[in-house]
Length: 217
Image (cartoon, rainbow, N blue to C red; front, side, top):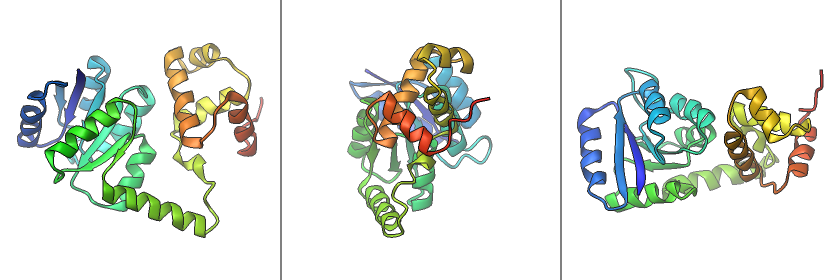
């Protein structure tokens, strides 16, 4: 059973989504929120598997900011962006903020269900248009000689964890210093490896050295 938190500033939209998704045998909607701060609070209390997050919520913290903050607080929670913005800039900013997926509100119900299942399983999900935008952006960066700028994909917390790993600290020491759990440190480390295409701690250290992160006091 996938535990889901629905975040949207429109009551009608939230109600419709909850009715649709609660009727599925593998999904349980355990909460709802109307803006970003409430979404973060509910997510930390309820610990859903997936947060279905709208981007445009003008009467509180927006979905993009909430996504980044929630991803840093609880990287084990997958965030699926559900939005009306079919725009490359929004897509790149959402992925950079830590979203696991990006789907449009006009997508068929079957596609939404597939997206929820995908991110709940730890995979990424992008609709076809989004995938084409990412590929187009990647090819453009390759053309301009900037294909290695993966550092910008990392969140501030992931960069912080990377720096401590590079300095030789254990997961337990990092957790103590950053006041987070060892499990959260391990999750950040896993995300770092996925985003950077690395497979071991020594490779992370080597990458950090190239980025000039080894600055001891």
